[in-house]
Amino acid sequence: MLRIWGPKENPAHLAAPSCALPTPIGARPCRDPGAPRWPRPAALLGPRGASDRPREGGGGAWPGGDWPQRLAPRHCVTARAGGAVWAARLYRLAWSGAWPPRPPLPPPHRGMAEPGPGPSGDKEEAAPAPKKRRLAVGERYVPPPRKLSTGVSFGAAHFAETTYYFEGGLRKVRPYYFDFCTYCKGRWVGRSLLQVFSTEFRAQPLAYYRAAARAGRLRLNEEPVRDLDIVLKNNDFLRNTVHRHEPPVTAQPIQILVEDNEVVVVDKPSSLPVHPCGRFRHNTVIFILGKEHDLKELHTIHRLDRMTSGVLMFAKTAEVSKRIDEQVRERQLEKEYVCRVLGEFPEHEVVCEEPILVVSYKVGVCRVDPKGKFCKTIFQRLSYNGKTSVVKCLPHTGRTHQIRVHLQYLGHPIVNDPIYNMEAWGPDRGKGGKIDKTDEELLKALVEEHRSKQSLDILGILEEDLNSNAEHKDCGSSSDCAKSAQADPENSCPAMDAMDPKRNDIADCPLSSNTDLETPEKKTELSSHENQDGQMREESSEEKDPLCAECKITRQDPSPKELVMYLHALRYKGAEFEYCSKMPEWAMEDWEE
Image (cartoon, one colour):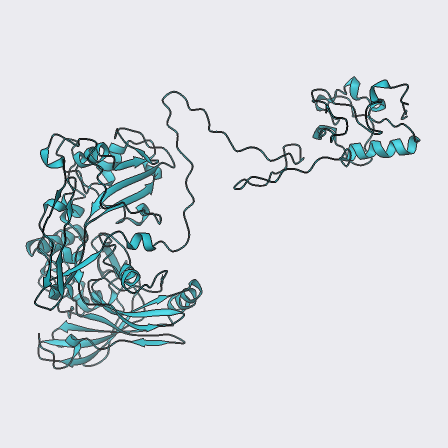
């Protein structure tokens, strides 16, 4: 039975509003009677029509089942006037959570999620930003991972990292400072930086990384690394600033064949990679189009090998890229290539369907193998000049080096192919898939042949990149070497910020006892004149970095002729388009080398 107390019988409610609930145990009462009431604990909420008192033994609404004396039902509702019906309504509203009214929650802070239901099912106010956990003695703080932008990776800041100059028919890039950035891999967790550098980044000796740490070029979570024995944790962010050199490419300009609102189609010269990879960044089609033709935010539809020239398509929007990519995956895109091969190619149509297996992704070598992927290429001879043949190639699949490997298998490799027309493949040069070497022996023979000809740059690699199986000892002049972070796609990061080429990280801290590591040297000559081809050749002042091994080496430049391979993408045809380029000079019927 519900009892109604009058104001005289219950003096404690004289100053309260006409309807109020008593303050529960442990809650702070409102000092201002007119202010909104306290939010009731979720434990006091019950379903509509619930009984007045909770069940005994812990089954009620109050934890533990004990109903406090101050919250007995006879004290839950008071009214100055009214009957039992009105009091019962208020009592039911109190149980259902609809009374007393609560103030609205404040809007959440920017970056903070909307508050969710608490453990009792009731929505509480927005929680404050989480406080930084108190670190134990000697414990290192690791910030949470940053959200990377999902848009186009390259913009004006990347294009401004360095500039080009032309010399001897070659396009060259001035050396520049660059940041390799990566998050800690799972296999690195619990290992020291010294161990990671000695096993996974072996392109430089450990002495270099020690000197780089003293120079402030190694940063962990944007803090300078002073001790390489520091143990890596999950989500650690590593930044390594290096002085970067790029191999030269041909000075032949990129010709734009078509440009509209949807696509950009170019005639790619040989020796140019499509996008940054390995040691190439600015000497790529993507960067040259952005820097010299103001064509930015392009989407790659398909790729050509670095040494292959010809038609190359880019989409200006993601929708166009997706539409054409579907045609590529459904093999609705007709591709036509032309090449010049050794010997007299058969006059009739030749179909090759030999499977292809990748031998080395780093060097870029493939071969015919039954365990490889299915491939199909159709060949048709166009002309023969007594020594070499011009052949039209129609690939029906798009495997790596498919045309080159199939031509080698048929015994007619491309005339100047720097990989598949080498003596390293044996006396028959891989004809019929006969290779009397293991994959390791084949790679070693290819490298030795190019090393003897001083042409490793044609492969786009350095000798240091191939010493992955050498022993690495931790001593001051150790030969521990590593691949660069961008040679492995897992180690690349879309947000790579350029360093200022004029900054000097070495001035404030000595690197080592070697005198040649104390101050950078500069070339003081500055001249500009024409070479034999009538091109302007510039010799600008270039800063020599004391930590950079490339700055101390003088490499012989390849000739423009060595950077051309006789394989050209002549035509690409889809459901709604067809793009063609001119036949290259070496493919003419009366051409003689």
